[in-house]
Image (tube, rainbow, N blue to C red; front, side, top):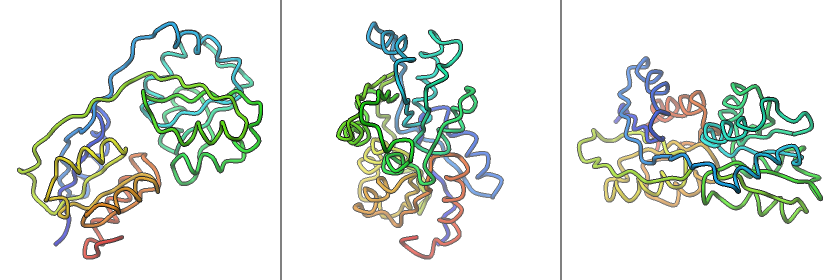
Length: 247
């Protein structure tokens, strides 16, 4: 049976352009955000970190959301960015968001912390000051790995996450579901329950692919990034090869 219904679960406001692309292909996108991102008020610690931006050698943005919430915080104190600062992003979608803020960032071909850590600019980091922009309680692999390599790592946490609950019993299945973070994936697994095998998961990274394949999804496709273009290509791949369970 062909997959026609595409469930978009990114935070509110991040699904519409992809939904438009999918409609042009005759698919039926349904927007059901499974997580909400809530901006944190600037506290003294965030202000101190932002004011010290020129003391850092490298800055890393771990998602488009970190750009969305982090850049305005930094812009409050830096109308022009420090010239010596090296910018990095977790993938092409995040790099594109930074480009809109006037920043050119290095990013891995395959999105994810593992790809970031393999970049040439993040190899010899002993003694370097590195700022990671993220949400509260993000994944620790990146910072821990850089710390073990001798870098001094600071986190600028500019937003927090809240899960959103939905009833998916009304959806036509089988369906494709786009799951762009571990929190979104686990929330969906909990909500889908015994209907999970009716869904084909599209994920943006090898780490999330590994998590998804440990579940009982109908199939899993790794988009290799969280940009609309990467997710669109992965959805089309899943739709066009839906006769197989593990594309």
